[in-house]
Image (cartoon, rainbow, N blue to C red; front, side, top):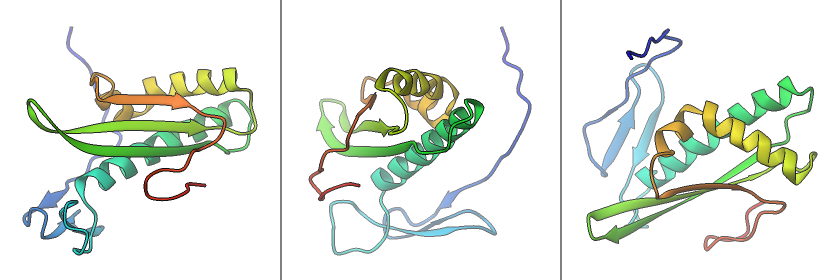
Length: 148
């Protein structure tokens, strides 16, 4: 069965510099990029960009679900990305945590399950055993300091 698509938006993103320069969208945003293993270099790295992409997409999807349920937008998404070396080389471990403080834990889990099926970035990652997402009642501190 062939999928049918109705185009809603498209963009191009370019990187000609690897981890020592800029990635950009023509006539749009330009982001300094750097190697995550060299903390002295300014700029975002692929792990950070992936985390921002997932947290923004899930946040927007949850905002739409809250609106559909006549609720104010209160969902918060935190994504932790770890680069590891496995037997197949470098890999990302992506752990998303969602907190929705104004509803029950069970309803938050339902909203997150709905969002997983609707968020395009989550759908891309969902086939990977390296991707987890779960509802939390409170965010815990990370290795980079306290979140929230």
